[in-house]
Image (cartoon, rainbow, N blue to C red; front, side, top):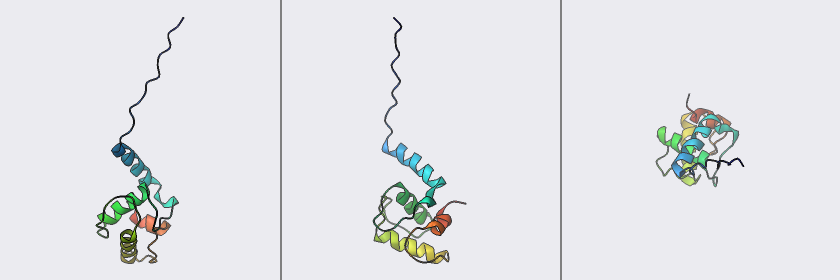
Length: 99
């Protein structure tokens, strides 16, 4: 009787590995979603990072779209001649995204 080989099991991804791969996805497809106060997740963390790089946000990169992020988005929108809403919409994503 032939012996069956066990399927190789991969080690579970660490949080850091998941964040890296999720962030890579966010770099390619961010503006499919609008973000607003109360939203959470990797896209919010990506936006926080981009806002920090542009000098508009100095809070934690925790993936929480709170009042501080809203204010940073409004500053970023103002600096980039966008409609000031505090919401990350398609136009804001396009300006946040690397060229």
